[in-house]
Amino acid sequence: MPDPLAAAAIKRACDACHRRKVKCIGDGTRPCKNCTAAGLTCTYNAIPQKKGPKGSRAKVISELRETQRQSQLAARVHGIDFDDDLKRPGLLSVEMITTCVDYFFANLYPTQPILHRQNVGETIGLMGTNVEAYCLVVSLCAYMMIQPNLVLPPGAFDGLEIPPQSSLQLGHVLLHEALNVRKGYNYIENPSVWTVITSFFFFGSYFCLDKHNTAWFHLREATTLAQIMGMHHESNYAIADYIESSRRRRLYWLLFVTERAYALQQHRPLTLHATINLPTLDEDPAETVELNGFIHLVNLFRPFDDTFVGLWNKAKTGCTAHWVAQMQQQLSDALPAYLQSTESQAVDLRCSQQWLRTMVWQLSISHGFLSSAAAENAMSFKYPIEISRDLVASASQFSQQAMEVHGIGLIEKLFDVACTLTDVMSCVPFEQHTFEYGPRDYLNQLMTLISTLRGGQQRYLPLLISKINDTMPLMPTPGYSIPAVPGSTRVEELYEGSQAHSSGPNSSDSTPFGSPPLGSVSAQAFGFGDLDMGRSPTAAGFPAIMTTNMQYSDLTVTSAPLQMFPDPVMQGYPGTARPTKYERG
Image (tube, rainbow, N blue to C red; front, side):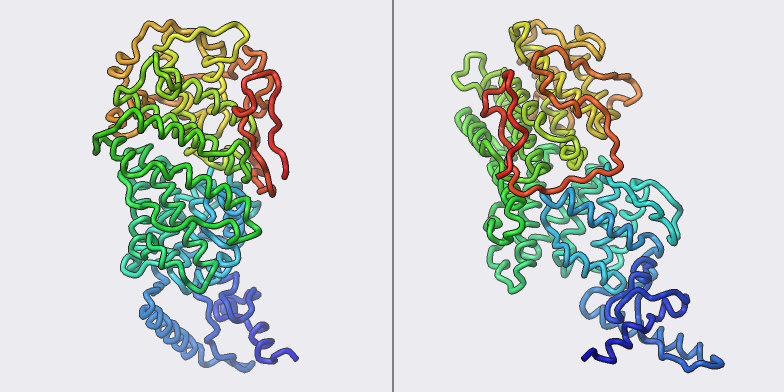
């Protein structure tokens, strides 16, 4: 028999909805949707008045204020004090929050599997009373709004106190909101998993905005908070809540991978190490595919430890040619021929693998280990040509949607590989027969790919063209095939003169074959049409999606179970027969 008290609670409107004379959308136990959307504290403290003349409104308001004051005092004891004056009301609607959460789980979750959908819903319900929950949800929404492909639903701004604006503009507003509210409480002394994830979302937002100093600050903040919580000790994962334990473990390894990638891109030191166990495939039978891809990603970055990063940053000495050759072999063998993962994970894995091979090759040349007569191809000057071949072959398998979800981070990796290939083509003689697929075609494909991905056309493509014009002045105007360049320049000469073409701060210290500075060329300085993709007989096998523009109104990437993404390099590429895109197990 239903509990009459529970039924009464459901029918009763909360204090705020009662005052606003709107229908209360809640069950009487959790914050209602109206209060959550309006940024109000949802309470049921008002004493129902009998119908008739109202003579005690002042008394009711006083009671409400006293009740909320007592609640805030109790919250201070637990370190979650939430002063309503800190937050800006009317920034987010329930529909907006739902859109952002859905986008995260549809697109970013496979490579960042740190949230649990049900727990996120419960966190949203606590936004009105818990400051950490509020900051986490707002930072998640900011992170998703700043992503290049999120589309706000029609009428998203109805009933809000802010004017209609683009998702990017709203992302800026939400980012500053979360940061300002967070300053109002001491999140450092007693951090939680929510605290660490919020800092990671701040990092992701500023990374997408190309504010790398701020991004690095918040990434370092996230790793420091994780260490304060003892997440680097395996013993701290023996907790009763299995979901909490698994998501915390994944969070640590995500920070581990992100820190290493950023250390290579921006020449930063490391703080986290492989001191805990990896996630296991059986921890969630419904996510075996996603977990398999995530574990591959962790293993791909594990060799890049303090030794490599110290050598990369010139903070250590003692590098040997044999050790570098072992690193290259380890990277080449890191991924199986067929990947059991989602498509977006396969994009990240294949592209990161080739980018890491390029980074190791750059370390090799900075230490003078390369030779035109090297017994191992990885230690030769022409190795970036092989890397570019493998990268183009891998990219040809994937849809543009699966590549777009990785944003600027993926474009930067493609850009670094293309810049290194450009340097090699300018100084290493390479004979190419008429119908043979070679470095000119690889560079053509990389340029087309960069120009098609959102964010690449406006910024990275002009920089790459500037790099090509500086390094290979005989190259014709864009739209024509890239010609063969005589191998008159020595690699050592290019090494000495390439310091002005580095993408990261002081990157010339460790990467002689670097990328041009990202702020050195105006995006309006070049007009770039469609690239000529018809030079090679095998170019027809490259997906048409790489040479045409797309509409991004309904961009989602779903996780198909048991997708097997083959490595085309393992199937005799190049050749006239193209491998299948993927096979279902």
